[in-house]
Structure formats: C-alpha cells, structure tokens
Image (cartoon, rainbow, N blue to C red; front, side, top):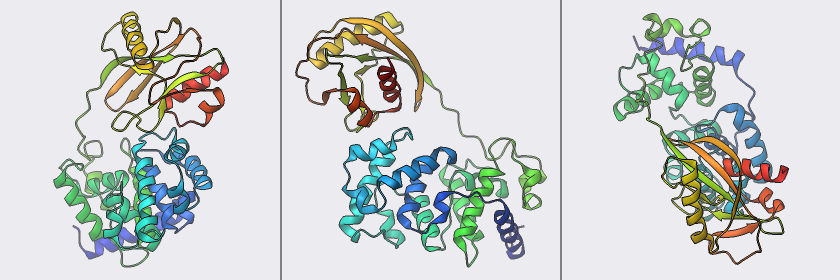
Length: 358
C-alpha cells in the first residue's frame, strides 16, 4: 500500500487542502526560530485559541532571546500565568540563558545543539528547525500522531515506545524533498481540524480513500485509547491572612513543589474528609508556618479545580485582620497592587481578584 505513487498522491492532496484551509496564525507569519520556539512551547498541551493572546503578549514583553534571558524568572512566570504547566516557562527561561551563554544569543541551527537546551525534546527541536529553516525533519505531535495512527491502522498504543517508533519512521518516509515546513504544518492542521479525536470529519478529508482506518470504519477504535487516569478527590484549605493595612500573607512555592516559582496563599491538604476538621487542622499548621496564631472569621468561597491526577475542592478561609509581624522565609506581606504584579497560580489569581473586588 505505502509505495512512492501513494506518497506522491498523499503529499499533493494534503498540500492542496492546506492551501485552501490553513488558519492565519501569528506564528505562521515568521521564520524567526525564537518566535517559533515560543509558539511551540506554548502549544504543548494547550489549545490554539488560548495560545494566540498569550503568544502576542509574551513577545511584546520579551521580543527576543536576550530579553527573555535577562528577565527575572518571576517576570517570565507572570507573563505565563494562566497557561499552566509552568515548568515549560522555567525551562524556556533557562534555555534562553543557555543560548546567550553558549551560542552568542543566536538560536542554534544544528539539531544536536538544540537537543541540549533545557525543555526541548525531539518534536520541539524538529518543529523549530523545520518551521524556521525548512529543515527536512519529521514531526510527530498530538495531531500528527493521531493522523498517522489512522493512516497506518496502528494496532499499538501510539504513546508507547513501539508505537512511537512506527510513527516517527512513517513521518520521515512521508516527507517531501522541498517545502517541508509547509507540508509538516499541513499535516498538523489536517490532524487538528479534520482528523480529530472524536467524530473526525472524514467526509471532508482529502486523503480519506488513502486511509485504511476510514475504509474499515474504525475511526472510533484507532488510535488505541490510553488507559484512563483514576482521579483522586482531595480537600484543601487556603488562608487569607490580612493585616490592618489590607495586605495579605502570600507564600513563594519552592522547587519540586506544585507551582514552583509562583506565589500562592497559604494552602494546606490536611488529609481529612470533612471541611470543619480540615479548617481546624490547617489553622494549626498555619500558626506554625507564619509564626502567629490567627483567628478565623469566615469562609469566603469554595472552588473546584484539577491538578494532574487530583480533583480538588478548595475552601478559602479568611482570618481576622491583625497587626503586622515579621514573616518567616518564603512568606511575605502583599498589597493589592503587589498581588496584581506577582506571578500567582491560577486559583490564587482568582482568589486575588475576589479580594480586590470585595
């Protein structure tokens, strides 16, 4: 089935489809490797429509690799706030510093050098060099992974090593000799807009008659589904500790902690099932951590959110305002104006906006 005539037909149809259906996205208007890199990192595990605004704001603040390298980590995280997976931003910041230090501020063009940068794996390295240099490199990411799995009628889990080997080999075999960048983007676009995870738009697919999964009606079976994650429910308590001037206590999340590098309100997982007991136990720990016993007053709100395998119910509890006292390391008093500027995790930002509105 997969011979040279098949490949030429596939390439031609995909290119023609892309010429009429490509979305006008800001990162497609540049061949600057720095800007391509920013977009590729942001697009990891994040939807395109969410990324567009962040991408444009980030580049206004950090227009080149030197400006990113010179920035404080807190400033980078503040621009990233809301995108989640903050490790991406910290690694990109470290990679920018490595580019300035080791490559005179110019993004490397050798794929082996790109592999050495923090946070850049095979897909990201290939995407940056392909889209900026038209390098003849295959690309396998979420959308092309699904597309290739269906074209191959892959019976393996595409995320496991055996499935990945098959997909990368197929991606390399598919590549044309010229205009590789537009071809790879066409494949990604086809996977994103047509060959979707559920109810793919096969009737509008330019290569449906080349796809064995379509011909056998197996679109709902392939790719082989990953094992579903078992989510764990947990109850947490966040504390709003104000002083008489209206400032509140915040904590800098430390390395290897959830949201490392960001700021949060004092937050606890007491490991108990009832809110009343959770508040009581977390209040005891709060007193130890901030060096003062505080008096709780009211429950401000309850939030529901997810982090990795956890489904969290967060109780936001306010304390009685009190005189200021010296806080231990990693804690500080923050005014409303400072809360606006500090990089906060997403739920902490919601709490901060609620406090400012009260």
